[in-house]
Image 1 (spheres, protein in one colour):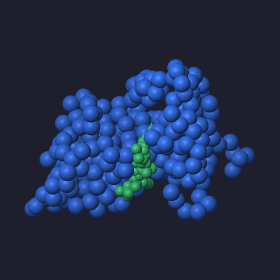
Image 2 (cartoon, rainbow, N blue to C red):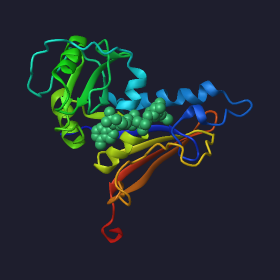
Image 3 (cartoon, rainbow, N blue to C red):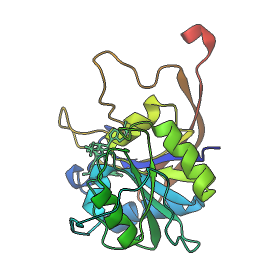
Length: 241
Ligand SMILES: NC(=O)c1ccc[n+]([C@@H]2O[C@H](COP(=O)([O-])OP(=O)(O)OC[C@H]3O[C@@H](n4cnc5c(N)ncnc54)[C@H](OP(=O)(O)O)[C@@H]3O)[C@@H](O)[C@H]2O)c1
């Protein structure tokens, strides 16, 4: 069974993605307090790991490409490193572009979700680093299979989906988001076309949220004026189709 997936994001009042572009904290409001809410709220969910898109993980993982020669040809089957009871740091990386250099991101065990077309040399690099991997179909884009595998291979029941907007959009399109946890910062970005926290990149006119409806389950104001919204994602009522 696939894990329960909560999309946990911090945003400006106009739904934008990049905190570096937000207006600063108002006089007397601590910027540190505001940004600290993200991890504090994440911890409240007691999830067994977090998922990010390839671009976001590439900003976090600090390894270098090693180009391993004479890597053996291996079947495209899940590989499990030494998890050692740790939470999972999962990257959706269809082409195998992220380099880790070790088996962890912070205190969490690194897991790559790949396309089957990645090279044997790349897989050998991951195994040398101790990174676990699974496959999301031939091109790595079949996210429902990948999430099922995360459940069956690692036994995880609850995961946070932590962006960026592109991967959040892909999960929404596949109906893989069970809940949104949105921290609305007392800030605005304001520029047209700036990335937003759910940014589906598909065909013109496609609606990634089709057939789904959101129900507000809680609303809390946190210190400094951050607003924390939780929405459950449900099947849309039949008459809306
Ligand atoms: N405000 C926040 O809380 C927050 C949180 C997280 C990230 N961020 C920021 O967001 C930015 C990155 O966001 P982003 O939207 O550009 O990128 P992203 O979501 O991190 O990664 C997108 C990548 O994921 C892969 N991908 C996309 N669709 C897929 C699918 N259907 N199946 C499998 N893989 C798929 C593709 O990798 P390939 O290109 O390799 O094919 C794509 O380029 C960063 O600057 C980061 O700092 C902000």
